[in-house]
Picture 1 (cartoon, rainbow, N blue to C red):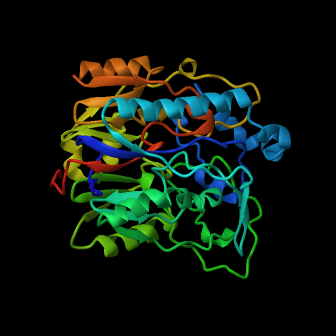
Picture 2: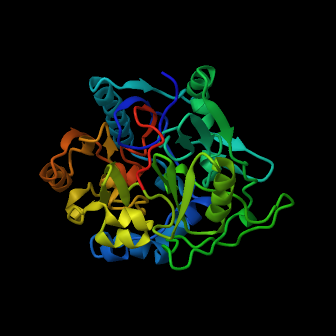
Length: 380
C-alpha cells in the first residue's frame, strides 16, 4: 500500500517493527547525558536509583567493561519479546516490515567531530516522523543513533517507489557545543554534562529533536519543546509543513519524548500519566476525556542487581500501540493498565515485554506505523 499515516489510532494496515539483535552495549556520552532526565520527581520513593544516580560512585564508572556487558540472557529475552510484537501484529492482519540487521562487525561509527558505538534499530519511532504521505527523518539527539535510519532505507525506498515523499531534516554536526543544556522548568538532566570540549566543527546550538517528541492528530502536529534544539527543529517543521499541517508548540511537558505521557487512543480520549498533563496541552485537547491509570509501583518491574541507572520512565507501560480505535496492545505484565482500559471498553491485546526499563522502549517506541486508514482530519 502507499504510505498513509496521519494519527496513532485509526485502523492499522502496515507497520515497521524494530530489531533488538546485537544490542550488546552502550557507551554513555554527553549526548546521552543530555537525553536522560529525572523527570518523575513524584516517583522517587518508588524508584530511588533515578534520584541517587547523579551523586553515586557508579556514575564515575559508567563506562567500565563490567557495566557495558549486558547479560546475554536478558538480551535474548529482549529479542524474543520484540519478535513476539511482530508476530502478534501479523496475527492481527497487519503487514509488518523489518529493518536491515547491522553487520556483526559494525560496532562503531565515526564522523569528523566524534565517534560512537552502534545500537540496533530497535526504537524506530524516534528518528522518523510520518506525516500523511511523507517520510521525515528527524535530526537525532543521540550520537550512537546518528546513522540508525540507514537500516530502514530499503523499506523507505519501497514507499518512495510507490509515490511517498521523503525528506531528511538538516543533520546536526553534533559537537559538544550543539546541545542546549538549558531545560529549566522541564525535567532536570539526571546526568550533568562534564567538561564539554570545543571543536573546529562547532556550529552553535543546532536543530535536534526526536519524532517521539511529537503527537500526530490528522492535520495537527503537537510538538513538545524543552530546549533550544527542539525549538529550532520546530521552526523547521512549521516552515516545511506550512499549508498542509498545523503545528502546535507544547512547552516542557517532559524533557523529550511524550509517548509515555500522553497517548491518543481515539478521537476524544487520551491516555495520560496524570491529570496534570492537561495543563500542557493545546486548549482544544483539554476538553477530551482523560484516562489516568494507577501509578506504577516498583514491584511492577524486574529488578537488576548492579545499581546502574534505568533510563526509561517508570511509566513506560503507557507506551501502548493502538491497532484501531477500540483495540490496544499493552504489556501483559501491566495488569492495572489492562484493567483500566477494559473498564473504558477497549479491547486489550496483551503482549510480553519484560525488560522495558533496562533496555528502553515500549510497543509504540518499537514500531513506526506507515499505513493507517485515517486522513487529514480536524480532530482539534
